[in-house]
Length: 356
Image (cartoon, rainbow, N blue to C red):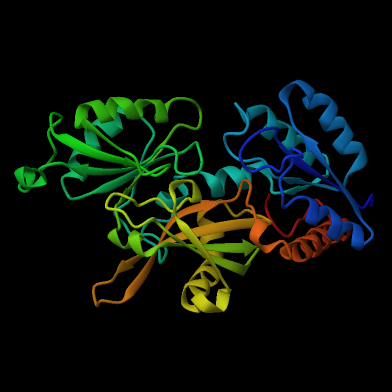
């Protein structure tokens, strides 16, 4: 065992310190050093992929991926390298297929009809599917469309039909109907006809990972989105993210003016119990993979048939989860990394505990 961990990051992005790496990476490195291990940051680039692969294979026991979706123009080469590293015995935290299976927007559709997600959720992969189905679904009320790529609310649209009273009894909204559109990235509003908006959304369906998630708009988002930060199978923190108090605001990102409050898991015990108790189901539905090292589940409050609070899953993030407001978690993360690597060193690789 080499007792060395490589942390992959990408150059650029708004999540970095002035020295180029993520603010919550250094505490992980220091926590590992305190335990007799070493770690270092490598900035991934496609042009250096071969050299980075060989160096990682020679020097490390594991990698930790800390690259935000969108910080790389194309993730194909990066994921290919990570898969080959895992194939050669390097512990992947997480495995690229885990990032894909947990991080894609269609994870919500794959969980529809469970205790976490209602049935009124759809995903579009083809333009004709969007063009045919969305006008019918929109006739039943406000929707939220989310692109698969991007971050910080980019490409997440609240879709309202203007003059909706004109279309109360129709089976589908006509393509000439005027829409009010609010983007979560900054809560700005636009107006387009339904036809224009559907054409605009074509960009979100392009490419290998193109898809659009279609969910009902939940008005109680104004009360705040609740993010559960998970370390493997245990909740370690809860963030309550309340949109700014204006008529159109529904975004829970800091960029859009939302306010954040950081709570302990026990402050949201009912929701935390719901997440933790549904992990076996979640793993089964999402391919049977080992859980990511760090991941988050975002919930919005809804009201059940009997007036009770219902927590609806809106998104899972697993590619690059930050914890700058709780840097003390670096201690727990370091312990978990070491435990995983040490377990791998004594388990026969032909008969693993988890499918990865």
